Amino acid sequence: MALRRDVFDRIHVRDAWEGALSDDYAVTHAVLRAGKRIVFVPECLIPSFGDCTWGELLEFTTRQILIARVYDEATWRMALVTQTIFNVAFWGGLLLPWPYWMVTPVMYALAGIKSFIRYEAVATVLPEGALSKHRASYILLAPLTALLFAEICCNSSIGVVAPDRWISSRVITVTGSAPSPSTRLMFDPVTSTRMSGVVACA
Image 1 (cartoon, rainbow, N blue to C red):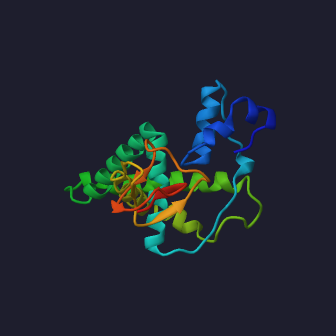
Image 2: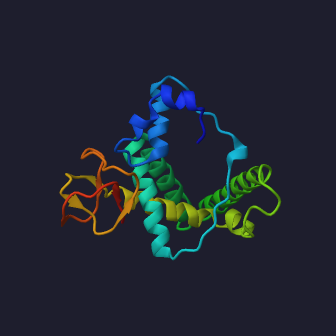
Image 3: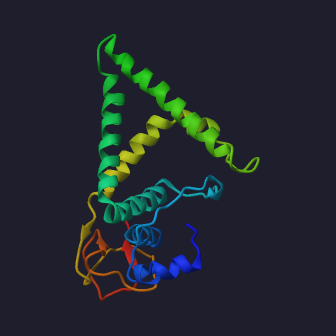
């Protein structure tokens, strides 16, 4: 996210960052409170690659979706509902008798088309070779991605608000100052003292 310095000062971004779990969400809320709007600029897309285990993948993605749940619960609920509907219809369709089970291949084709369009759209604003070589995976594994995302949404639903004396067994630093008790996220209650700038991981 980019903004001019005068706008940064005028909408009090520094104050919004105080105790925030997510700098981006904090800026977003500051912008909206100031009555301004956010414009998507495709050229700002940056591909990001990295190696991780399945456990690390679930830990990171669950943490991100959990933060989204805290800052934008309406969108989080919508994602949970839509992913659940898709997965029930797609995988449940395999159990239906002919010709009703055709709902699954039709949904698979539509999901693949949507993924193809998204991939090609992103490719138009990135340099040649910027995307990974897993083009087929992006397009053909859409149902598995939806299943994984539904799992992540369900995992993120177990996050609870807790007092400062509770922390998780695993934490990650997010900001330089401690988040307020109303936004601190917890999973496993353990005895500890106050920690600065943390959000709990799965």
